[in-house]
Length: 281
Image 1 (cartoon, rainbow, N blue to C red):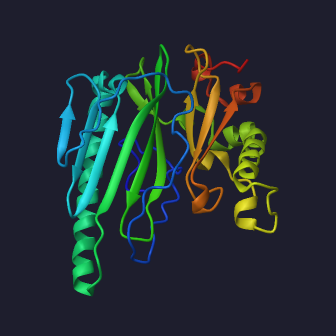
Image 2 (spheres, helix red, strand yellow):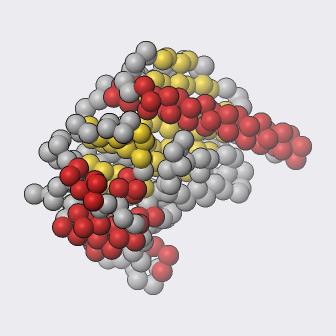
């Protein structure tokens, strides 16, 4: 990944950034599941259709879009995030960092293509943040990211963050737990069962156990963890956003697996955050 948030959010979910080797025409991004687990309705600024367009709403969401022969850049976050000054400032900083990284990489790629006499295809970076759930004490967000840097195809990744309203600080969802290992142990069985069920659905038949690369379960907490809610008061479900290549071949796209908060999950939480969760009903 280019970067993992101004708060060092580990994604990979956003992870498997396997940007390719052979030069070819750039295809459209692979279809993926929605990046939000339980998305509350939140109004968002519409992307301007024209190139080099941007719109910044004071105290609200933001959408940036730039298209030219060298690069394509887009970045958006919803009103719910823009209404929080500290969060808005962090997202704006992240936007500028992502744009600077893209421009730098694109210029290098363009120079290299000219030097080696092969076609240059515009680099791209697009990221859209959405509300997963908006609770009295927390705002949970996830983003879907698409990048392309001259290979056979682009790559989809994910990111996530929580805004702690009491502390007025951004947190990684995983940091609410005693350890990654504790959370993994608490949700692994449910995650692996749900993942295999979706694999069978997409592949149209039983999982080929001879394919060691895409038949085994993967560690749920090595994906992007997002926190959702069905009651709008507490977190009672956990989403795992899995990018292409982590659970299946590129053609299968991204996976999104949702598991309930259970007693085991509650036990894996740091004591100070347990009141923000409840067992799913």
